[in-house]
Structures are given as structure tokens and as C-alpha cells.
Image 1 (cartoon, helix red, strand yellow):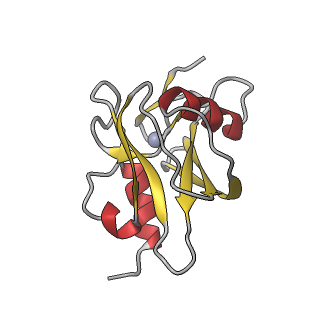
Image 2 (cartoon, rainbow, N blue to C red):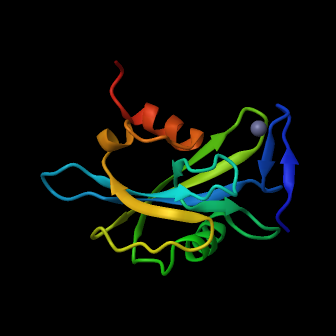
Length: 147
Ligand SMILES: [Zn+2]
């Protein structure tokens, strides 16, 4: 079941078991990598920010299975992909978001399903000009060279 969860830090999170989503990367040889982002609907938390498709992990579901299900609901058919890593973000209060990093062979066309108003492919540099979901902002800050 999807439920709101109040973590040890007192934040209110969607997903009693945590949440998961895919960060798809297209990494062409000799050019900057691009990433598939989703602009969130105005009806969800962090409305209208750019983030990655994902959502609450259900009882008995693995983070990977949750990420696949959410992608299909929010974006559309999954491309073929290779998982390159998983980044677990803890809010500081034992609530976790599992960011599944995966490479794809091209910038496949992403549709807009549930809770999604736009999708697009962006380089890390492009992302610095977007209004990002806080979880994605944390990831981006870790990727960019210290300034
Ligand atoms: Zn929290």
C-alpha cells in the first residue's frame, strides 16, 4: 500500500517503504551525457519541479520493481537499459529514495503519463538552469565540480 510516512526527522514522505526511480543516462562517445527528466504535475509534492520518474515502493516490492512500475505509469514503455549503479539517498531520518542509475543506447522518446507534464533530455549543465526536485538537486551537486 502507498502511504504517507513521517520519518524520524519529522518530514512527511510519500511511501511507507521508501521510494525508487530511474535516472536514465545516454552517454555518447565524445559528447556530453544527457539524462531523462520528468517535470512533475502540479498535483504531487514538489509540484512543477524537474525530477526523475519514480514513486513509493509497495509492500513486498523491490526498489527495482517499484522503479519499473512507476516508470511505466508515469512515462510509458521501458527502453532496454543497463543498470550501472544504485544511489540511496537517506533524508537523514531513515527514509530512503533509491535512485537507480541506468544507461540507454539513445535518447528514446518518452511519453507523459500519470503525474507528468513534460519530459526531456538534459545535460548536467542544462540542469543547473532548471527548477529541480530536491533529491535530484542533491545528486547534481555531487556530480558537478566544486565551485
Ligand atoms: Zn525524512
